[in-house]
Image 1 (cartoon, rainbow, N blue to C red):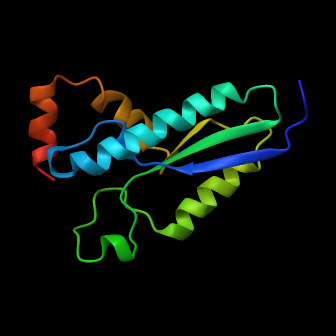
Image 2: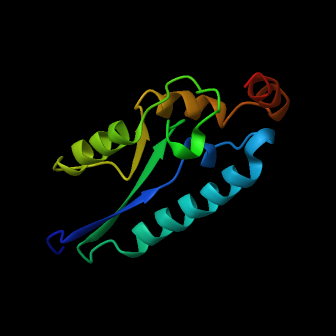
Length: 124
């Protein structure tokens, strides 16, 4: 196994895990990017290049100006801090949820029956 020489950071979104009716185009494009990046990461195993997928929740930025922030909102600096912290670890994760508590939450959300998910997502 070669020494690691590079990490490709891919900015995905929690929307990739379970898109909502109100953002299904955004969510589906992030799901495609997310899937591509994870497959690329598998293809690059042993080359010294790894892929890390960042899945932030709502990020307060120019793109989201005027939108109601979702729970656990972050800002670009916080996303960068999470990424840098993970990059600094000897054994970093392939998928980084930002904030970390979104990982277990979306593990539940992705397995909910569709009717229940639509009800929860409609409240946003």
